[in-house]
Length: 229
Image (cartoon, rainbow, N blue to C red; front, side, top):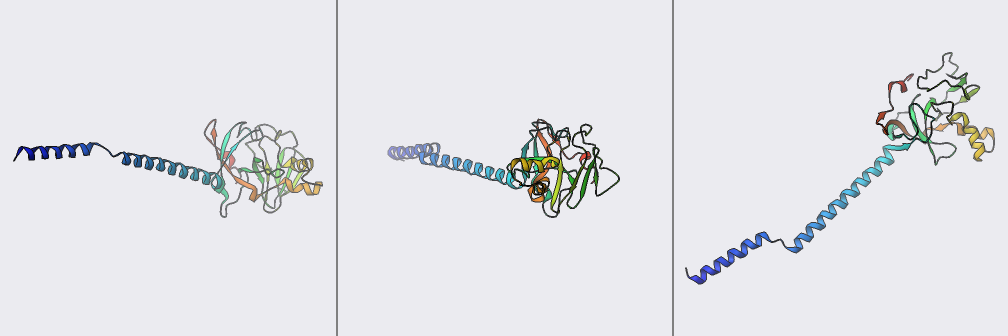
């Protein structure tokens, strides 16, 4: 082989090796574009999933008052399950639920279900009686003796509605006060009209409270919440 041919072969080999180690600038740009696009797509998917979960699966709430002590403290953050009453499932007595406040539906409240559709609920001397029962409801969750606004109430719960009371009855703004609130806020013109604001329609119940996630992770479905079901 002539010296000239040897030089040609060497040059081709050098060019081949150099080509394996050098990336084309356009290829590098294309890879970065793909990487950026993949991250954008992932972020969009995550945001869409979070939106759907918040809209259709869970409701997030912050508790501003002491009305549900000791179960829920001021400042607790909790999760409600929107699908708890999907299909044929309905709220049961003692469920702790998040719902739209009847007097002002821009506000969400959290209380305990006490009266079911069609029931007569009577409050006498700090005890609750359903449909004329001689035995009061067992309420082990009350944090203290019920001494305020604890007598003389009779509620006829309409069909499709529920009667809600807070656990901390001495301070809770609940069904006992909502008719008066409706008159004070001017959303009702008469005591008769105001009575409908006493009850929560089933369609206004956003979800069943299931657990607290701040400041401590804690289930709200403890055994004492299921008493009497």
